[in-house]
Length: 184
Image 1 (cartoon, helix red, strand yellow):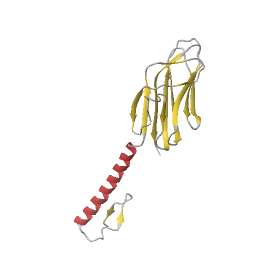
Image 2 (cartoon, rainbow, N blue to C red):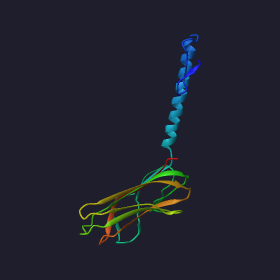
Image 3 (tube, rainbow, N blue to C red):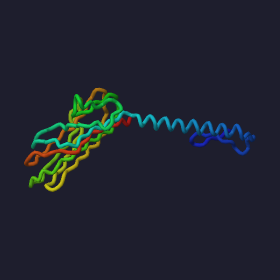
Image 4 (spheres, rainbow, N blue to C red):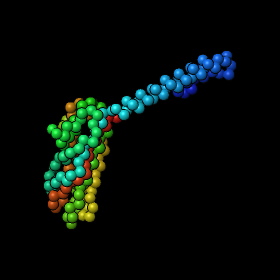
């Protein structure tokens, strides 16, 4: 079997002596080995460190005050990155690597007659502010902000979400979440 497919499966050429049993066995073994390698890669990717914490109860945010978001629910965590009973405002990386981090915050409309700004900031224990997003709020609808970020994390480092607004009165945040999944 002198020829191979691009994936490495050996196959006979027309000029090769015919030995169907051995040729089929060799092909089946090559396919099985390749499929098992792909399954192992998928299984490994599904077990990358990943966490998501969230909350839905209102948290009041005073005007022009930097406030850390509090979370109440651990949606999933396969690497012990969340400990809401001890620190309800953060995730702590236990495995170093590159993580896809996402923070989501819903600012509830407070009916104030002026449009105003709302900011969401990712804060690292080692690097301080690492990402931020700011939107104008409206007087008639909630403002939902999503902040995705690729972050090179070190073991022991933690991330928190900080919010701020300049509305004329306190604003509640309702649905919110912070998630991180290692991608490399």
